[in-house]
Image (cartoon, rainbow, N blue to C red):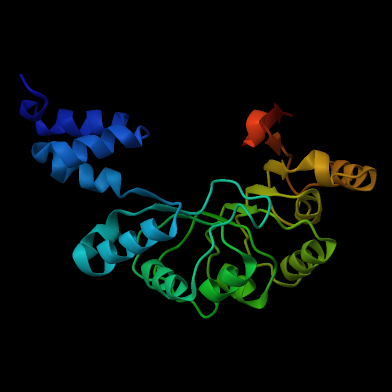
Length: 264
């Protein structure tokens, strides 16, 4: 019996089991016409946009070629998974920022959004943005701004926040002041990724139980180390998991991400 001759229910279970193997899914999607209708929902469920070209292609799919595919998307990652400096982020021309805003406005079922773009681009993307979705996770590589604050106000469902690149005390202070003055801002926040100042500022203000400290060896001075320890002791809820993520230069000049995790 060939793969396409299996019962529909079994085919779908197999495809769900292999959903993390994007290459396999994509090959089946392109080659096997029989499984096409099952695969399209899984292929478009998690979208990774790592180039200007791929963003343009995705824009065409969800706005003109196959608009109904936008309902399948629950996760979208713009740029790299981790971003520690401006060279890592996806550089977006003005026209593509407009296209990305249009894409985001069409994703009714989006739950996880990662925007690893330059800070100016992030501000342009979020400025006055109206979206139909309610996020569980939001990760970005920008800095604190009025447009970011207004966007977060509309996403009270967020349980995971990633604040990459920003290491300034002023950013941490601005975010802390916003959360202190507005109890409805990120009320369900449970997981936090960010530099030591960002993490330290928020632990006592929201029910955060999982923490990821980015670039700890680079930005974690003795002062920040003691502040982080105090904040862990004074957190709103017990912190049960702490991770440290480092961006390292590997052999041949390649970059790699090193993650050290611990459970408290």
